[in-house]
Image (cartoon, rainbow, N blue to C red; front, side):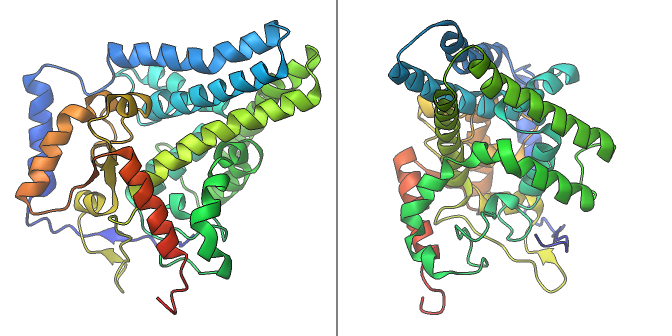
Length: 364
């Protein structure tokens, strides 16, 4: 990743963010509601954890046919993605609750999803939310050599087929968390002295990482084998669970930033991005299926990525209400507000964009 840190313009002649921030704050004040989660989020947390963990306990407790075990593994994967998008995500942004200890607990749910709090907060809260869609700084755009997400990434001949094979690789996201990504990220982030909040002791961070990985493997792999489930059934069920969750999470993530309409701004010779940070989010982010209640509920409001990127400390349960404020303010300032009316439209735009990025740039 690029180590030269870009800066954002401070010239907001449109007064976009000042106006928007005032309007959003007035919305919460006039309606006498908190910006954090409410009973709807707490109920959803119970549902998502149940969807994730109940099948696991059923598999451990009951002697069931293998096909049913695999079906329950798919359900666990759906629940795993649901916990990540609805509970862990808000918790690590400090928006689940106005109580910091509860945010810490909910954010810590990432440990049973195969991840790590420190790595997530640096990669997501710091790098992705600050340098959204900037090649070399936003790690969400870094898929190694195998997938080309931006025009600035090096092109290889096999990228011509990436709009076909990428979807099969997307399912490996959380599986990679479990076995390699966290170790690589922690080594890299500590070397670069990156942190979210107060810096922590490297010894403590490495200790937490190793211990939580051991506990994770013990719960999801060792315990079922000890209780008599064949090792190959356990491994296959584990892979199916992760593949389901990884596929859901990857596609949701990509629809917000790697589509035809979103930009990949490049810093100028002085390392400055053309727009202010808030306006930058409008150019680099897209919403999808904003009126689809099922998508909105299950994805934890991640279909309202514009609102989330500008106001990451506001819980997703409020995005539907403040979206009209953001959209209207952007319109008044003659700024973009990228939005796909349906999820199908966003998926199609993503894979069309992958196909475009897969073409030989020298011939394009």
